[in-house]
Amino acid sequence: MTEISSNISDELICIGQTLCSGIGSVQGKQPNFIQKFGHTTLQEGEDLILHCTIHGKPKPHVCWTKDDIQVVAGDISVEKLGDTYYLLKRNVVLADTGKYICVASNEVGKAHCSAVVTVIEKNKTPEISTVTQTKSEWKDGYFSEKVHVTTGELLQTQDTFYVRDQRPVTKHLPLR
Image (cartoon, rainbow, N blue to C red; front, top):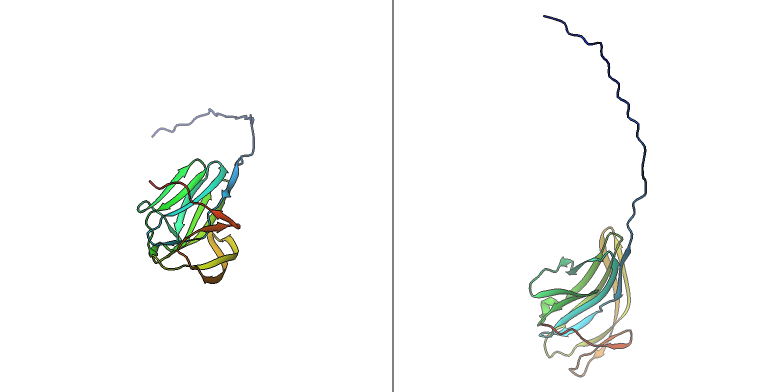
């Protein structure tokens, strides 16, 4: 067997220079609810329309839930028109009663809006109630809300109207 050896040595030297540097950060604005929806009471057979206007940069991703379950396509419709987001449900039934939450999120942060929707039997006189205090918070990835409600006398007529911040609220956006 023949022994092979080499007396050649190679040396490689790399000299580098940083040509640019910087700190990466997310530019934009956290989602913000410009217009929120509120608690509402409907009779069976009426149409539910919840809508809110949300600003944020980049445009927020919006997700709706009912009783902590994500709303999916079906008999509930979710639509967007400009910066306004809608949850639409035709012909509500008692099972549509629950807590509805809209969560808007982007790379900068997240925000939410929630309301309790109550559906009562058709032609049943609703009870008048007033939300006197609410407290909402995100904790460990979960949303919680405490609501204090005062209840008054029964409404004597079948006319339904909505009041928010002591101003009448009118429904708009016709259902298709």
